[in-house]
Image 1: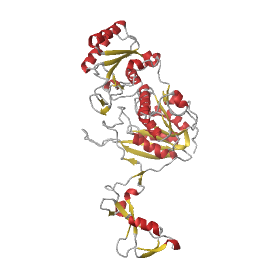
Image 2: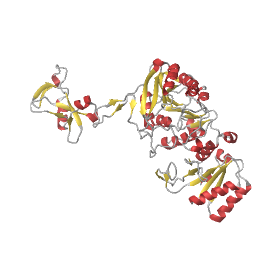
Image 3: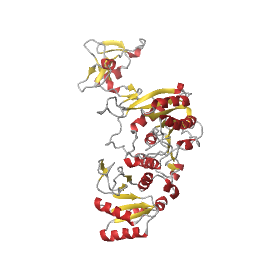
Image 4: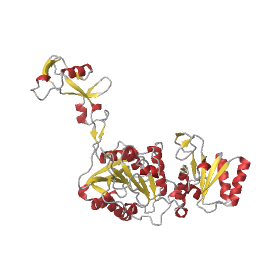
Length: 490
């Protein structure tokens, strides 16, 4: 089957407000939409890495649920416009505003197009210091197009230890190895089949199978005679059946925990398995999947792995860079304009890749941008970071296991510290502090990033090397933007 031509560019990550980005999309160009918009945020929403320094108050922060709904309403109108009339939307939210979101979506997509409310258990009940029930689930509102929708059934395997009464009664027999089975009928419903009429194990009947197939199945232990003189029957094993169709309560996909290999530190990150389920049953290979609040890119990873085209939008430059690195690492995709034009790579659009724009973004966003641009990992604990904003690991530093020492990852003890300052001229005091941090952590090499460096800062870097043999590499934002850092990173 030939690949359909998309009406919009795919394998693109757009950095910006989805309201602005979606207005450039043509009508009815997207097959599947999944969004997980942050509650109580605003159009300048940035990535919250979960630390106090980044949980700063926004001047334009949503003050109420009504403000959140009014923020989302025009964006959902645009999403309804770009969604094909034969496809689906999934709106992921938690308890804060899900009931208000449902009313807004009914108004936008049509209450008759509401398919179901999916419940996903994202946490497990814990001991509480107050009376009440824990809020341990998320809601995913599922809407479909007015002209039908894509549906690929998904079945869950039966659990022999947790069967419903009907299934347990049906599969009541057990092999010595514990496999459950039922005895099924082998009699042909059509009595006028001379070629299938023969005697088998002393019983003459019109069978469903030929004699050769019946004898082969008997030798394999799949056909049994329950008792002497009884009609032979087929052993149909429970674990070979299609399974139970998924319903609207999902408890079989566990949330990400601190030891998960997927975990990036993004506060609202969802497991890939959750998005793979949605993409699988609500789209087909070659369809276009859109995530307009894509955060760390889980929906994009799922779409890529399942051979769908995709588009991601997020207002946070850090999130866009994290997405790009994740696609490279998890999907072996290259961020390359020429490869993208030939249908092989992907691109990131509208990042603030100018010195002027980088001057204006919030300090923690600038720190994250700089660290990630070097290929490093931002420090999770930015309060009291002791002069280290991130770490970069050489290729030979193979990952081992996660732990508290390095924040999000625990590598072999081979890493270089990174310190970032959103200043035009980093002076000697900052260099002195970084030297102390290198001495404390016993690092042989480190990187300083700023828009520029004073002459006394550069003199001190040289003095420190001659005295200790430890290397501090000063990098300017212009060098990073111009990608003139490969030799200095060596």
